[in-house]
Amino acid sequence: MPASSGTDLAPACTPRRSARNSSMQTTGRITLTGLLTTSGALICAASLIGFGGQIWWVFELASHFRPQYALTLGLCLPLLLYRRRYRWAAVFGAFAVLNAMCLAPRLLPLAEAAVHPGADQATFRVLLANVNAANRDYPKMRRAILKYEPDFIVLLEVTPWLLERLTEFDGRYPHRAVAPREDNFGIALLGRQPFLRTEIMQFGVAGLPSITAEIAVGERRLILVGTHPLPPVSAEAAQNRNEQLAALALFARQARHPLLLLGDLNVSPWSPYFARLLTDSGLRDSADGRGILPSWPVGLAPLWIPIDHALYSDGVEILRRETGPTLGSDHYPVIVDFHLARS
Image (cartoon, rainbow, N blue to C red; front, side):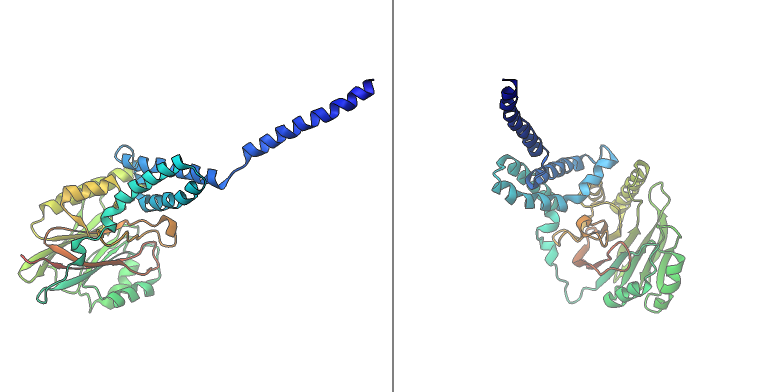
């Protein structure tokens, strides 16, 4: 009798252990749908956090990747609909639209993007390039200058090493204002035609050099500004950058002539501080209506964002804008064609 009871109990216990193990395996399994849902939820959170950039400098970092947010959430939608996750699909769709609305000024065609100069209007080309202080690929920089033949060149992170090599362009660009440095904040402005006035200025408390130049265009005047604020890698650096952007906005607002501001501003178009710069200065973004035009970081396409900018005031009309080929730097150059509007 005892032997028989033991035999009867053994089969009854085995299925219960199997059911428990099966349940544990199902609970611990990671599915593609679950992974995408979790990732999408984090992107939705980052989308909201990006609007709080003025609360904390770290939050602003989340504002720079609006194109990536919109694209990733949009790509998640078909799979969620296929899996009948309709609530998550609705949430992701709403946040994809929210991010797309932030991108709209650069993506939607504008009348300004189709401006054509008159036969009697002088047109100019400016090349803006953060060449990277550690970059020693001078042949690529040289080829870009020869290819685009700009009238003005604004170079950032200019070192004495680079200036020495640029002497070969003394004949083409005899007019210069330079402030070379061994760190990442040297700057130079080269021009084909004379400058009426140039000045090395410091906007904000960081003490970094910027260049302003006044240029004669017939009987009119144009002001060019080249600048490079600190990157927001800490609370103090972010504050210094914001103060420099505020000082630049005041300078542009007070300018008595048409103005073109060029620089690696270390801020994306979707940052609240970029929006404040445009509002306070009265300047407009030359990329509006022309695309996202990312300029950094070279070699990391999934993280591409536009932080190299060309902003312009009333009296300037943008004819064309593009990003150029790599110069051996971590930034792509920006090329802008423009003219002065008729009085």
